[in-house]
Image (tube, rainbow, N blue to C red; front, side, top):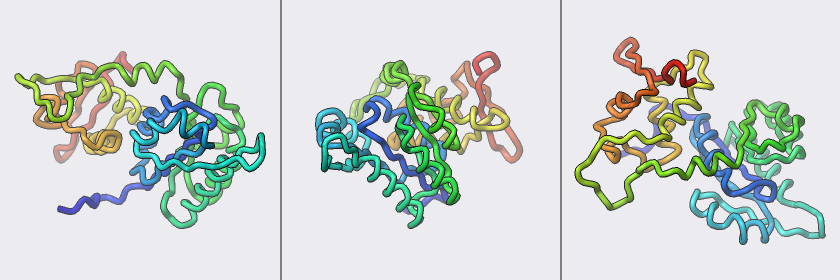
Length: 247
């Protein structure tokens, strides 16, 4: 069976300035970047102290390639240069056309402008401290705040692998609402195509399947949510949006 997608998806590179942010930001960054296409590059840049002591577990868990940069002189940060060069290389050789740079460092503003001049699109995921110079240099800025990390780890009743539950009841995981909210905010009509939603959920969690939550399919799953409204369009296609009052 071929795993090739029927529709060519945009290739996305997620590049993390590990010296400038915290591992808790990764979940949010991946959810943001997955709406733009297929994430083909995942890299985290930092010095030995940063990667070994703070980031090792997070990078391994999220399948990021660690890019270790030694400091050749005190106070000199070589990680920024490595990230910038890899981004330009990935754009020029066609490995990615969309970039998600995870940092709050305004030094990357020039990189953003150069990528955009060449036709690439750039999203920045940063904290509230991110200067306007960097925010305005990107196509889109997504602000992460520490409280989101706490929300990400609220139990969604996701079943453990290899541990089927009996009886199997229909559950409504919170991350589906978050996915619809994120995708709808980027849509002019505030609606999300059912196929697009399914692709996004698979990108953010390759193991996702409605059957694990007691549903026969994604459509059956969405019908159980009070906060979502399903609309049947032409040719049997469905769209979903947040219910009035929840936007």
